[in-house]
Image (cartoon, rainbow, N blue to C red):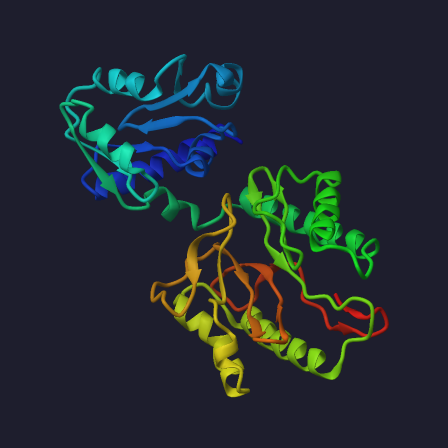
Length: 343
């Protein structure tokens, strides 16, 4: 990741910290650490200070940390206790009065650790400051999500050619994960569910859902429910835009399904933000009255679930802009009777 991009993110975070009356922030959530520093390992703590970035990790990541973070931050490699070393480092700085930490992902033990640190400064929980920055994607992030979506769709197409009636769902999932790996996906952003899947590129996730009928032609009820979900998904996908509240966006699909008598069968929200985590802000939900930010990438995934029968969900990923024209990744298709599945 280009150093200037990471540095710009850190400066933007410092601006938010100043607004919150904080001199610095202890970052523990690994996706946030990757966003700020580019570090892709699994163990690290970052302290964002007014004029410096402190990065701490253990001996396993000495070379990786120097390679990925060394041009941006002061790298501290600790062989025993990262937290003890962090308190020692922070003790070197005078004049700081309030240090924030990521309260939304801190454990009870973490909070006790902050209380027992014995620092001269106050240590307090902060709101989701890095997540606020992450909601708006830059062109590099958008490109990574687009590539992840492309890999996911290619893997699905390859998997559908291989699966047969009678196979276990776990075997179908294994086939799909194999196809994802063969195409370069770094990891599976969530345990593969047969009807929902994604890929990961440069740490960024795609999240796509398709509904498939196996072994025979889709019957009339399956086609009817599928086409209704598809109509709701297309309506939301074409109308959602930055500046709408999450509630307004959710209502595009929800009102259509409710008018058709299926409102109670749509029990989840329309979608969620997508990025370094498969579920992140903003929420495209009837519970969210905040405006959706420009350049957020969100999922559009209405679904209908009928007890005793089954369900249909179709999900694509879209980049929000102020205008109604959207960049979308993945396209929910029509029922394909000739092959006996929905593609």
